[in-house]
Image 1: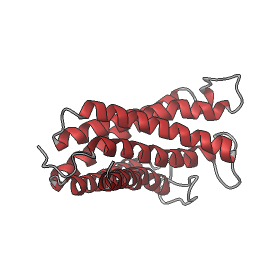
Image 2: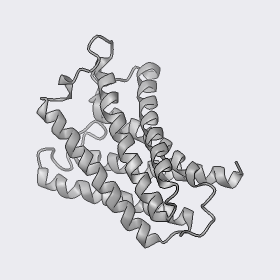
Image 3: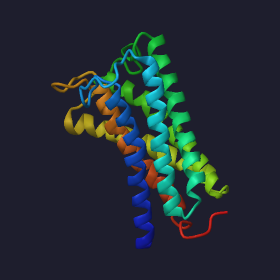
Length: 227
């Protein structure tokens, strides 16, 4: 792989993490008090405000992501910003509502016990729920974005590869945090509630892995005219 291709792949991965994982952090920042800031910018019981702020954050992050892709791929910026903003906000908010509804219907995620006889089962349950969700969201967005770029022959394989990479990235970071640092859902670090903090750290790993996978699929095309 040429240096220019390596640079392109790394930049797309880092830009993906900065924008998309950053949007999750920004939402957690505003919907306090939370594991990262302990601020009470918008109360967690203020549902109308969160329904306005959440999609707005995701729209902006998706738009920035699209702008970066357009610059790297020499594509139409306005079209890519619109597509990425709508795709990212729609998929994330849909799955956020679905996962939240699942947790509420079961009386909390602590009721989900996929591996009841294992140590750290709460952490494993967390990874088994969110890693596939992150992978699916990534796959959908990569599919939409690559199709919008005009590379229709690549969108299925690239979407699948990006989704698998994101899911594995999420899982890998979650396991590294557990076995490398002893951080796990259900075992609080002093001053923090673990799940949301670990969710954000794992999301960063997923975004980098998914972005790099998508960049690898596009590395030979970023200097070519877009169809």
